[in-house]
Image (cartoon, rainbow, N blue to C red; front, side, top):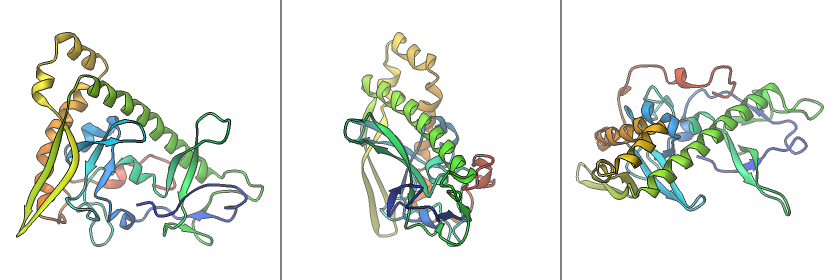
Length: 255
């Protein structure tokens, strides 16, 4: 999805503008999207949710599976519309993202970045990101606030996944499907082992319940039924009636 992610700078990007999302053509090649733990219950009715190992955090992340081959997203229609009523937060944030920025002798911090190669980025159309004095505009501040919300959700998601890993609940899962004469396979996925979950001591299960994570765990398990949506290729109808835009943050000029 991101082709040229650069940290925003008021001097280098003084004239930069961003057009609002009018469609999701930019995501048509995204076959997996990161999900936050807070999104899992809503997403489970639409997407298969799996976990993948992320070396950057030495742990696991939940992902919405959007296609059965790299470069395939069955939820993006030919006109760029999203064929589901909920769009993952990281996709709604595009063309913005947070990236780690660590200078010599500095503690870890995060910079607001933008995909400079995105069709949404322009020098002539859309909302300016910096004013004539080099200060962030309202459009950029809204983007920053949304990214900060995503970052906070990601931190909670990391804690959630570490708790699952500490209880040895992840098990490898190979995704295989037939599409006509073709066999499709997605490797490197993990799911929660339901037998191990059921076999947890009451104290360990109670800890997951007290943290408010059981709904997300069971949402993930239920979501595995959604693989059927991917087997036939691009969808023709919205799997769940509704407007994708309804799930976007209110007041956000980029969503």
